[in-house]
Amino acid sequence: MPRATLPNGIEIEFDTFGSPDDPTLLLVAGFTSQLISWDPDLCDMLAARGRYVIRYDNRDCGLSTHLDGVEVDTARATEIFLLGHDESIASPYTLSDMAADGIGVLDHLGIERAHIMGVSMGGMIVQTMAIEHPDRIASVTSIMSTTGERDYGEPTPESLAVLLADPPADRQAYIDGASEYAVWASKRHFDLERARRFAAVSYDRAFYPEGASRQMTAILASGDRAEGLSQLRVPMLVIHGWDDTLITPSGGQRTAEITPGAELLMLDDMGHDLPVPLWPQIVDAVIAHGDRNP
Image (tube, rainbow, N blue to C red; front, top):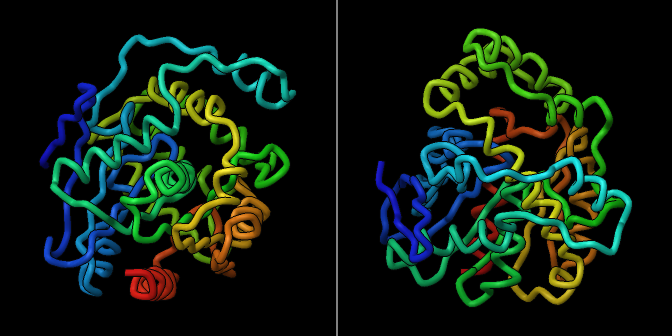
């Protein structure tokens, strides 16, 4: 796969689908998720609808730069965030830095302007891109994400426990642990065998649990995006599932509520996942949103 070396020394692994002559759609993955979390078949569907699709590994994940050995106090960061202390959270990077990484991939490819789409933490990143780099963004789609405000999108205790649990280092145990993702997935469409296959591929490509604490601290250190979203002039599409227990539906609803002109698509039978049966509806919405905002 190709790799972009950014001016700050960060290296970002990426790949592409479709023709570079088509409008660009940059895909941003979620917390600890590698670029392969954007299924190739989904990327092909988007490319077949006239998009030049780019997916990439966030820093501290996959085959992009790992900040090996850089320690963070995630417990303290969580305490400061949840209790609303007037105290800054120490973090080696923030969502702004991760947003700049995505812009750096566009720079590397000579792309001046792109549509962007992100899921979960990736939704937070694309929101940040749109706020901080509006001239580079044609439209933004935020999926299963939130504004960063404490009172919206709060996870259920069961989902949070699964998210924050240390993943098993043993390959088979890691694959078997995919069954736990059902806690936040679509109640109707969760496919355990598909989840297990994906876990195996993810483990073999890049098992790097160390990056999780730094990515989580980056989220907490970045605060909320309410003010920036309330002044946003980049066209926004918000997609969220009613079954989501990791970022509960109020996260998406709040994002659309405070973003001027935002469209909101709430989907039945979608949790904190992108179920295959819903791909046609999601692709239709994303393509139509982009076509309205070239």
